[in-house]
Length: 131
Image (cartoon, rainbow, N blue to C red):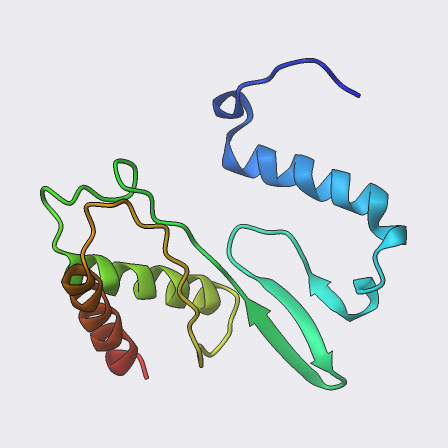
């Protein structure tokens, strides 16, 4: 086990992705899904064959308060739009056609049901705009 400590800021996002790719690749013999995988760990999206002749993209993003947005300046409606736009952008960057969205939320106690509804109003507007 490596006990050296390297700050992520020293190697950056793409350096970290490369390190994770190398680690997963070295263990990939134990993973039974590699034959369906076109592009695995990457910045935008993974690409795989769910069935022969059909390629599918899978992406996920985390928007973190204080890093990607500040609720002092950002409405939840705009944040919902941004969350969808980020995922659509990742799929488009890989040449894909976005069809479905999954949303994962990690909510502090200050967030109310009405705030989540406002978030989804923005998300649904973005979904409608981009079909």
